[in-house]
Image (cartoon, rainbow, N blue to C red; front, side, top):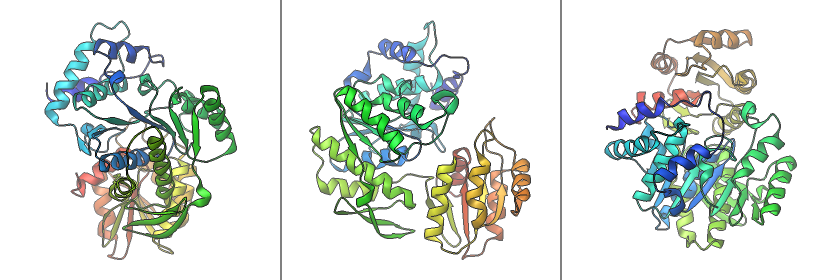
Length: 421
């Protein structure tokens, strides 16, 4: 089986009509010899920042000499990006071979595994096969009932910034969402929480007390940005100075979460020298998050797809390009709160080039352009991502800024068109 054949088969197993729960994943992994029980994990959930935090933690562990698996979603361009070992995506032959093993194991299950459950099992088999010392595991949706939560107690359970997302599945208040996310905390692990509202902190603190888990809250009051530019940021946290290559004001907060996660790993017995932490933070990359893809004109790529993300994006752009008007290449999903999202961008926009993301949930380019025009924005609907990008670049001068944002579904194509993947 080729990698593409494997991807096509996995994508056939939709979630629609399936009851949430872990029983299918447990059964599938049992048929595969329970590989998850032989691995160590850092388990990361949240609404925003979990991917960047995962990348920084994984890179710090790799810099410390460990063999590190990284499981993330969604991918930007190729399915292989979801399964990485020491920064390298799974090869096509390995993807085909391991996926075939997983798919065959799942045949005969009375309640067949879903797409994401198959992916999770694939990752577990692959990371064990690759003899990973530890796996940095990003939750797909929620926490308590996410298929990744079949793992035993992780070394550290991490909760990043929370917001209202997937409310039909997780609940329509921060308390309910925090309860679902806190479901990854298990007796025997340590926990790190990105400090946020008292509502969220109260829920997570209660779960930690009930499970006997030591909780570390990040300390944003000690966070001081010393220098921020297109090539990264230098900052002080808990009295120590660090550097990250990631742009975006919000990335220093994600870095603080990563730093506290590494400290929790140290308390759990992992040998991660300070030099490895610093090298890991500085070397970490996370494509599609305030990524400066090209200069003259500057092209910034950001996968922000909810109001919180857009607020953070707007703040980061204002810091990097004070007083400049931005040309936005943008596509959104119709079920997102796009009026709130776009309200953050309209005041700083020169113009919008709208596209229809490759998703059945997409808002059409024409409907998006019409909405923006109704809000006083300059907007033109484009037939494709390629057309939108080419039009934006043709109309931009060397000193201008083009920002592609609104949906991760379009960023992979933009990166491909720019020759980045």
